[in-house]
Length: 359
Image 1: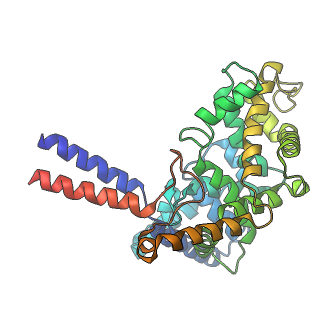
Image 2 (image 1 turned 90 degrees about the horizontal axis):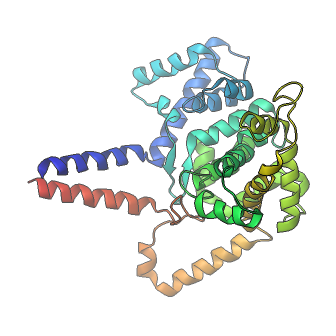
Image 3 (image 1 turned 45 degrees about the horizontal axis):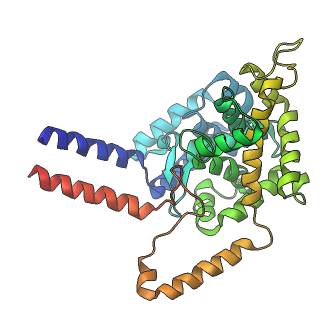
């Protein structure tokens, strides 16, 4: 019995270790940027920008294929050893920035930190928020993966859209909330980054001051500037589908996955989407499109929702209000709203309970 309890204790500690805190992530990111600035100064490095080195370094924690190197570029070979040496010298853990995946934020949202920086890396390397690699490395690439997930499922468009929403979209293991937040927030944070500020302060401020729907609006306006006045369901579906279906890099990816036939130059000149996969392609894009429209802040809706929430809080009374925990604007991957304090409290109770049983 004690052996089982010890194993359970170890498992719980593994969960705690994997759920790195926001504060530690911010500290590690701050140290990483500090060390990369020092690297640039010491080496008189001018080939790539500070932002490129930071985003690429973090991206390499998970995305290391030759395709990613082609799209997002690389960093000097000695930068990785430089960061490692700095960590050892200063007793820090800047290299941990390569390992933050599903990280719980103070506002209750879960983000894939490495994914978000990979999105920024690809956009920065392509020097465009609405072209080059911008769609491929972010929402478009994840939408293509969603298409792959359902390509062997039979049904018409309506059935496939329901199937996506029931099994893959905003669900852990599919195109989940952590992926979507990374795709949305990466371009916005990159837009605000310059040599006079730092990512740690930007991210800390961003996730404590911006409501979710206002972030969706910023993303749409930045990534699809021609669709700003077309944020209604039918029009946005059509326009977003055209953007997705005409993106050459996404076409190549679909061809490599068997969704398009290769052309004269193999998958670098692919045919149109295979007819049997057309409903699947539209269903994947429409699911993402509908989410953007449903969560786009149309004329101060965030402010209205915030006022309504504040009114409800006042009605609950001051004492109950003090007990309220910060909640996410969106569901987490399981469909429930996240809570940073609740999760850590549960870990603590489990820890005390196990100690009691082992005595």
